[in-house]
Every structure is written in C-alpha cells, then in structure tokens.
View 1 (cartoon, one colour):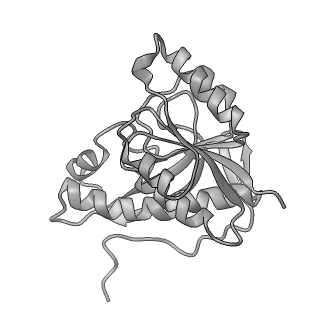
View 2 (cartoon, helix red, strand yellow):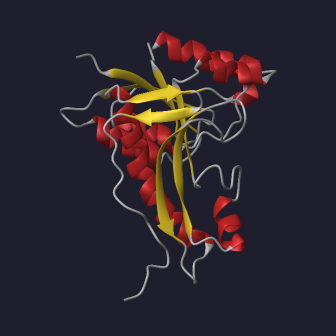
Length: 217
C-alpha cells in the first residue's frame, strides 16, 4: 500500500515536525514526509528536515507582494512534490480562504488549546487567567475561520495552581507531540471521515471521563 504523501509547513524550531519525522520513520508507517516548507529561512525546523534527509525549502512571505502570491508559491511547491495532505506544525501565518478551500479536508493544524476554547494567540496565559481546570491541544482540519474546523484529536492536561505560562506550555507541548502523529496515522489509515463539520473516527472508543481535580475517597 502506498504511503500518504505529506507536506509540513513550519515557521520555527519544528518540535512538532520532529515528532512527525520520528513517527514516519517507523517501518510500518502509513505516511511519508515528502516536503518541508518554512516561511522563514532561519527556522531550525529546516535543519531538522535536512538532518532527516527530507526535501526542505524556505519560501519567504516577505518576498511576495500579496498573501495570495505567497500562498500560490506554497501550493506550487506542494503540488510539485505530489503532496496529498498538508500539516501545519507551528506555521505562523494566517492562510486565506482560497488556500484553505484548495486543500479542504487535506489540511490539518495543531493548536495549543482545547478548541473551541482559546482560539488565537496567548492560549496558555488566557487559560490560567480564566481559571480553567483543564487545558490541552487540538488537531483539526482547517477552515477559513482561524483555529476552527472539524476536530480530529484532542488531549487534556491539568492546570496546576502554581502553573506559569511556561510550565503549562511545556505540559501541553508534550501532548502535541503525541497528538499530531496520531491524527496523521488515523487519516492515513482511512479512519477519519468528515460528516458535516464533525470528524467521525472509525473504531475510536474513549474510555471514561477525565475529572480535575480528581474526586477524593
């Protein structure tokens, strides 16, 4: 069976990219990364891709007169590599509706909150300020509205009384590194269907409830 051909878009250090690289290195992996693109030439994620022997390229958004022209360059590079699914792994550019619709249901993103809560930036600070008991991350199909779309995978972590933005971010990031590869595996296995604006996952059976703080004896 042919592996799903994946393109990954990054802007920074690429820790989620590394999680994908590691997972796709499995002998029985259903996906392969065929291109890594960054809008910043100094993104360390490009070095990660190079070290893994993956095709990688920087396409600087500042070199284009419009968002549409920049995104057309992205699409041309992705299509030239035969990309079938695009992963946004810390890609810090808001995409136009035209690009999103071009890749509809073939474009996924990871966001550091339990969507639809805390869309946008500063998610960890906002979670702490709101006093929520659980924070987390979400992998979802992308829609034109920022941080929206059918949810594929979520993970929850406790928000501790003494949490800082940094400590909560570290806890959530560890789950991001699990959730993004999981979402990719589910899609590559053909287990994800989009029905309306909801994802249905074949043979998914969540076990019980997560309560925080845990009930006492």
